[in-house]
Each structure stands twice: as C-alpha cells, then as structure tokens.
Image 1 (cartoon, rainbow, N blue to C red):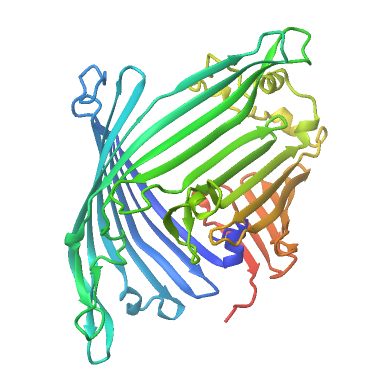
Image 2 (image 1 turned 60 degrees about the vertical axis):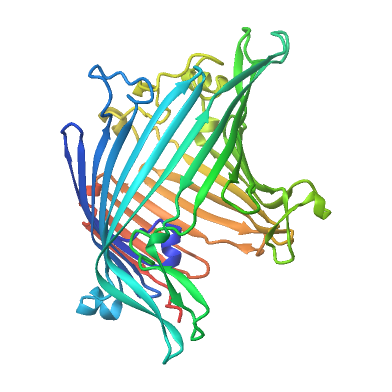
Length: 521
C-alpha cells in the first residue's frame, strides 16, 4: 500500500506492502506465533527490499520457582525467563533482477534464539534491586571470508553459504529507590507546598569479549600488518562484539509539583501545578577503559505550560573533559585546559503548542475538575487514579446514537485544530559553536462539514531561510470507505488520490493514483 499521508514516504518515494498471520496458543505458558512477508521499493533508486518470510515465536514469562499460590517474594521466587525465536529471509535486489533467479543470489537468512532471565527483590525495605542476563544464539546460512590477494594486491571478501552459529550473553544489575520531599509554606500562602520526588539509580553492566569468533587477515603483502574480522560481519542479526564492556551507570530523575491556592474558586480549594514533569541526569563509568573512564553527562527534562497546552522538552550533553584540535576527547579536564567546568557539545529544545475549537467552548464539570487538578482526578499528593477503570480514560468519547447522527447536519459546528512545533539544535562538538537547525513547523485540520476535513502542514527553516516541505490534504470519511487527495504545491509539485475500504482487514481493496516527481540520476 502507498502511505499517502506520510511526509517521509512522499519525499523518498517508497512503495510498501505487507501480509501477516498470527496464532496464539492459550496454554500454560502461552505461546504466540506469527509469520509475515514485507516488500518495500524506492522508485528513485529502484532498490527493492523484501522479507520472505519473517517467522516469530515467543513463550510467555515463566516463574519456575514461584509457589503454587502465585505469591512471588524474594530473589529466588521472582526468577523468571522467556523464550523468543525470530527467523528471517531477507532479499535485496533491483527492478531489473526482480522475479529472476538472480534476486536470490545475495539473500540472507537465519534464526535468532533469545532467552532473557531476570529477578527482582527488595533490600532494607526501601531499595529495589533488579538483576538480569540475556542469552542469544544466532544461526545463519551466510558468512564471509577475508584474505589478501597478492596478485591483485587487495583484500578480497568472499561469501560462503552454509550453516554457522555464534552465542553471546550479558549481565545487568541495578539498585534504586524513591525519595519524597515536601516543602510546606503554609495554607495562607499562594504556593502552599512544593513536592520533590527523586529516583536515584545505580546500574552495572557486563559483556565479555567474544574474540573466539574473530580471525586475523593480512592487510598488505608485507606480512606485518594484520586486521581482525569475524565471518559473521553483515549478518542478518548482527555480529558478536570484540570489545569487553564492564561499566557502571548513575542516573537521577526528578519531578517537581506545587500545591497552589485556586483564586478562581470561592471555596478554599487547591490545585496541583506540575513545575517539571521530569529532570533527568545520567553518566557512565567505564571500569574496563584505560582512560576517559567517565562518559559525557546527559541532561534532559520536560514541562507543560498553559493548562498543559504547551509541551517544552530540552536536552543537553555536558562534558568535563577537553577536546583536541580534531574534536576528540582527551584525558584532561576542560577546566585545566583553560575552559569552563563543563563543555556543552550538543543541546536541543522543542516547544509544541496545540489548541483547537473545543478550547473556546463551554467545558463540562469533569473537564474543569481535570484542569484544576492538573489533568487528573487524583488527590493532590496522595491517592492515585484507578487505572484499571476504563471509564477514566482521557480519550473515551460518547458514541453517537442514530438520533444524533440525524441532527448532525443541523447542529453542526466547524471543529478545527492547530499544532505548532518550534525546534532549535545547538552544536559545539568541534568548537564550531553554531545553531545546527532552527525551525518552526505548523499543521492543522478543519472539518468544513460532517466527515469533510481539510488539513495542511508546513513550516519555516530559520537556518536555511526558506519554507519547509508543505502539504495540503483533503479527506472524506464515507463511513465504510475513505477518500483522500494530497497535494505538495512547492518543490516537487506532486499529488496523490486514494479511495479504499476503511477497515484494515480489507485494506487491499482500493484505488490510488499519484503523480511522482522525475527520477533523479
């Protein structure tokens, strides 16, 4: 099927199709199986990628040491494992070789078995500990061999057909807790309290060196220079690693919320205001490294403003180590190199603002209560929402009955929505100190009549000083059918028409037509 509404698909001119079948066996444990086939084709490059087929099977989580009453307490009873199997046969070819025997020449196939084992328990009542290990066994039908050809004076890579296998494993553990802090300022104050929740976590990861799967080959005719390679390079499920990993991770997540007096209420009511949804810090210490054991520090956070209509997300990379003239990290603190305490190699911020016609109409009692409580009907700092009650879903809407459908045209109001997205990215990885990207995007929809919708998406790139990819779309909901027309007015000046059955079961019953831009050679 052609995804007519996907911007990336339109720019890359991709055609894709897929078919799948799945089956669940309600045994103990439950077993899930599926088989699928996919096809994608780029009309510019004429490259065709297919998976014929993809097979997946999984066994639900099993607790072999749990008691018969189902209670799982302690490190032993919480031990559990799963089993996953994935098999694929991938084919990459082009238009000229499609449906010929040559299309199978470079096909890659294999199976991967994955068994994750984990457990969790508490120590000293307040600390949660998790431990896990994952075993992977990969079977492939295609490998490579490398050797130096003295006649042609170059390294040759030969494809070898035949069964081969490799096995890998790793171990991870972590310990964390949650710390609550409340700062009370008094009930007579505008801001009565601020709550700070901290979640520190320390993790450990270990992955051995699988150098038994690596071989040496000559790089030239001198017999002195050699390189390492594994015959599983370019495999369908990757290749074993040749680097030993032994590291610790430190992270800290924070949330801040305030309890404020509601001036709009005649009663002494309070409301919850989220100051920061999250503020996260993370760093890694590489025990196995010879130098530069500390990684860069990752910083990220988000908050919501204007009654949760505006979402602000920010992230940055901080580094205590200096860089050389080539932009590579050196084992010297940045402050000792004449710089600041922390460098900022990269940073970005995005601001999204959404509003619609429903924001300007009368609000229901439940909606006003949600706004006062910060979007949820839970107690300010205590009782949580009963997530098992589907009636509390924020997305549930009352279904229309037949009488409402008949009155739809007579009492119709034109609904609309607008979305703005501002994005800026800063880059200073090599002392360039530049704004790498800077743009403002906008998109929206307006329903001119029942089941008639017009939409647009566009923007402005402040870095390139030009209008970004712009698209107009017209949609008609025919209940059981759907019709759409898409138009790109600038640049490629392409359009597409689609009509088909709305149900995904009959998605192949359709008609579509589109004008493509000329191929670029």
